[in-house]
Length: 393
Image (cartoon, rainbow, N blue to C red; front, side, top):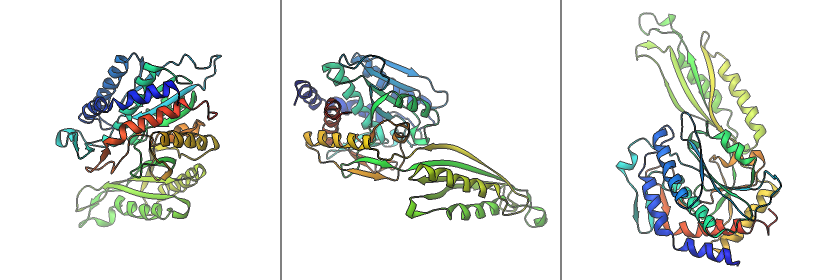
């Protein structure tokens, strides 16, 4: 173990209390994806922490969702000569899925070594971990390249405004560590599905359902037919799933429905499958099962899949060894969930996901974090960063 590795890991071992204090404040701050003010308040907390440790932070303003933050730790040992792919990226999102007021209803608590609260694992603990890793390298140095902490604000809805910043960052990345929560097994994620979230709106014609039924054109009837056709596109063997998870429509119970809407969740494994299935969805939405109806499809957000490459496999093996040195036994898992790591992987940056502290039951009132995983997971990532050169990354 190098002197710097010993210094960094020893310092991190003393920081659990400070980590929990930052995490408590963060969890107790509202931050749903559509609550820009709340997400930016968490951003202000991160910015103040980083600047308090001498780390400059650039803010990339976003109009509708949380701003993006870029915290930079310069490495005196980084290669010069204009090589753009020298940044080691630590990534995470500040937004949660919970409605406004959720932290007031169930604030941050710890019981028997388990922390609870909205977003405690997904993924505010990962943000805190990244903050302290950046602080450690700012304090002790030793990174083989500049570190860039990227903190975005709209991942839970497909990063509609964060994606361009993520992709631009990935083009400069040597490697990317995405600090989504470690799996309940303690494993990390080496593969994820891609996803497309879309909405289809249907126009029918209103009529009195008793006195003038035959003059109506039911948008809800059309919705039902389209849902059946869309769900039939599911192909479990190929990892393709279609789910119309939200529906609405109609004017009143005694009116033939003049409008209806469905929201579609598509998940897939291979990027080519995305275009194939979306083409078939467009055909279904464009077809009138009930004559006289009209419909349009709008894509609201999407993720790219995270697929293994030789370079990402090498990064995983490096991380696995670094985790072992931190007392952790880690394997790679595939997840049907989506994440921003798919965007960086699609650009070509070697990427590993779910390297954050261990937790589970995300997006639910039972979401939890294993407090004892905060420091070892931080130490594992620090060790991985320090060992990049030796691994040929």
